[in-house]
Image (cartoon, rainbow, N blue to C red; front, side, top):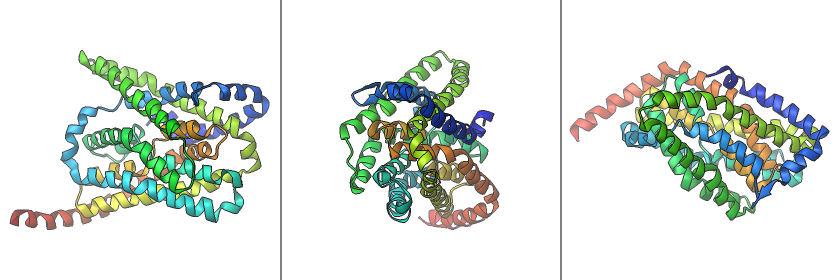
Length: 355
């Protein structure tokens, strides 16, 4: 994990301050950027999102889908958490905390938008950053790669329906044309571009060339993310200054969701008798989010000034410190985990022989 990535939370905090200050000093510039739209797509943000997402997708080898069956129990647990638990549990947490418990302390006109942002954040499972978390837990690299490739494949077809369903259940009107356009712009096109570049570099056996490109683009991706945050907080400045408690309140359901899903994935892997080197990345993939996509989708659907965009950015703000605590828990509990997984594996072995 690079120094820049390790201190991502600090850089996000700096972007909050810089964005709020610049929004106050240069409101005309931010209004000009916000007006640069075609078919409800903000062009400066679209460019920044591609700069964020494409370098991350370059790391994904979709040929790894052929290895999915090697760790089928861990794959099954992670898919269950990512697609059957996380979006729905986040919606429930949003309804309880934002729409009910914290409602008196939040701007009434933004409550539904905050819930929408939380749902969008949870519906996008983590991609490239999870390679960092997996490495820190000494995770099985082939499992991590095949799981991320499978998640990205599912994301192409499942993101829009899940987001649309949960927003509808929350009585939040969603423009389906914009949602589908977001999927095309921020998932399908970046996946195609990244895979074409990856295959072109590897076709001549140039793994070193791909590694050099990834090394070069890594900082570009993070700088694009931070530039997007400066723009977003430039628009959100007045709301944040008027309601400084909003960010802390939005962080509560996100924190609960991360620890709940990570813990559930970890426990289910232990009950299934899966190895610790698979359970660690499974828990981390189950808990973390593809926040770059979430930020882009929220801005496209609801705009820079929306509570939805702010909610997704809170996910960025707490991503690194929260995921590092999950890594710490996974590493410290390895002995406990392996005692249970070993007993489960021993119990399964006779049954397999009898069958």
